Amino acid sequence: MRLEGLLGQKRAAAQLTAEAASGRLAHAYLFVGPQGCGRGTAALALFRALNCERRDDPPCGVCASCRRALAGQHEDLLILAPPHDQASAQIKVEEVREMVRSLSFAPFGGGWRLVLIRQAGQLNPSSANALLKTLEEPPPRNLLVLTVQDPAEVLPTLVSRCRRVNFKPLDEGLIASELERRGLAPEAARLKAALSGGSLGRALELDQELLAANLRTWRERLAQPGDPLADWSLAEELVAPFRGGERLDRQGLVELLDLLALYLRDCAVAAAGRPSAAFLPPELLAGAGLDLERASRGFDLVRQAQSQILGNAAPELAITVLLGRLRA
Ligand SMILES: [Zn+2]
Image 1 (cartoon, rainbow, N blue to C red):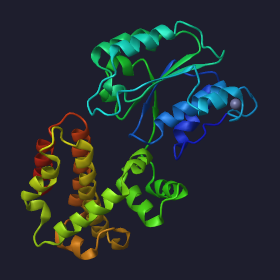
Image 2: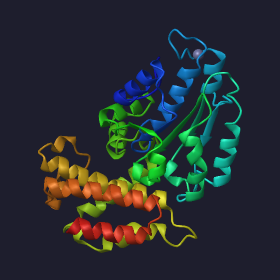
Image 3: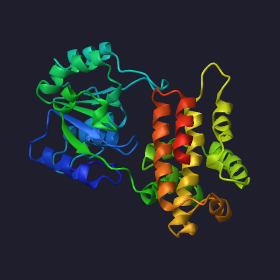
């Protein structure tokens, strides 16, 4: 049995295929890892492999079950996820209850049913409670997979009922070559991979034109004299373009912060003596005078601020706190 289409997650794949092959699959799994690193892909691949009609080397990709699964039309594959367009959207209790009800029927295809709960951290307390009993003892041949970035996102009562599978951030080189395979020019692929934080999903979401425009803005900003991180007007510059509308564009702000992350990353690369691996011109990096430790720490701080902004944090506060910490 193989897990198809899963990039760079050998350990997770080996764990799942071994457990499936020996008939020791858990009732419920917690797939832990960064967004866009292949957790959902692994769940779907496992589903196809379990239900393939050819038993010698599943999945075959051509049997009726494989084809329905590949087309996203398999009746035994249930996916719960928060609404895509809302940053703080929750998985509602009604959806969980409906899923639980549908599990009382045996899987239609005679094989396995898989319930994939994406971003399980968005289960609100009622939704999580409605899930508990099913998670502990689902009806036969039903498998639940919850994806989280960090187990702390969900209640301990959920974590304890699931078997954990760890997914790691993808290697940058791997992401770059996958982007090239999908038709991106090498330089753009390398830049997006550098900004992806080990997430192919995130790399694919990055808007090429916006990235180029933001990069120009940053170069101009950084070319001005003085330490850019010591200047409070940077906070205003960052937030201002996203203010004024009825709704602040969190995603846009996060993409702009990507460039700050890139800058700090390049500073770290230059401080480590590998200026050729940087994207920004050496003269811009030299002016910053950041050592390796401060630059690396800064990079992590930007990533934290980005995930806060995509969560519920007030963006201006997150930026102000970020710049305060960067200057420290
Ligand atoms: Zn098949």
